[in-house]
Length: 315
Image 1 (tube, rainbow, N blue to C red):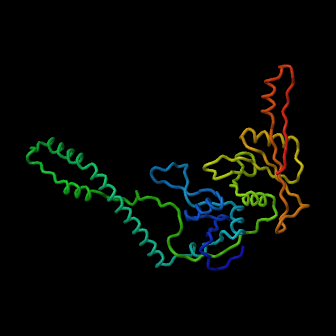
Image 2: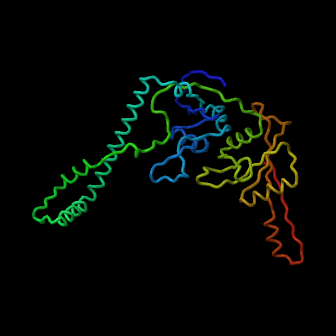
Image 3: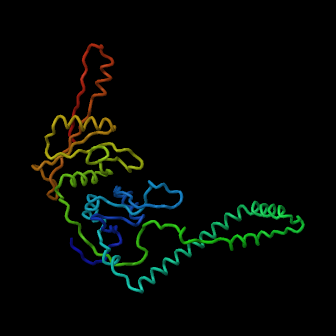
């Protein structure tokens, strides 16, 4: 892994190297990549704030090795390592600055909490005053001697508000707030001529959203648009060569029928080379006709046999 210090162009997305791949910590960068470059990634951060489900995740976004390699190769992003700047031994001055920043954030949380509680109290001030009046009457104080000033009641509420640092909000992991040095690095090169990378790159160039297909028993899932809005339309199976065993063919195609998607087999054709010396990727789309035959069989005599079949077409 090589490393060099350099200025990063403002029009490039910064990917932080963690766990051997790129991470995104800026929400604007992630939305830009998702909207204009159909890169999905995976949210891996956690949030314990009120109203969030434990299953919901937040920033940062972890990219796959394929996504990271593609973005760097296409000049859309640069990969940087911040280990030198952020994992160095802290000096006394650094610790003091950190503690000052932490105390400032806690103070801001305390002030925000106080403001929110006072707003809520103002909205329910009539109920609060009536409740205090009832308590005083229950203690035997005559009605004529009870004088409750709304402003004074609010001041008493403000003085009673306390903030325990143990209940402070956990900050969502995001971009580092301070300026720091980053080192531009290169990933250990992914084999650019590998079938997996070439297929991912090819569908990406076609404008598709491509995600991992493990949950559907495939190598890739292909979406016509953002996965939050659309279901996957195809599953892609990678083959070492153009031949496939009949049993594997039936298994994968029937699996695609079960999940209501088209089945695409992808393999390399080493005899043909595309631009930039990339081997040509060949596709074979297979459709299962079992359902159609079953519908036809219902119209046939019960004694007539019916069979299921599959047909293929190249892409």
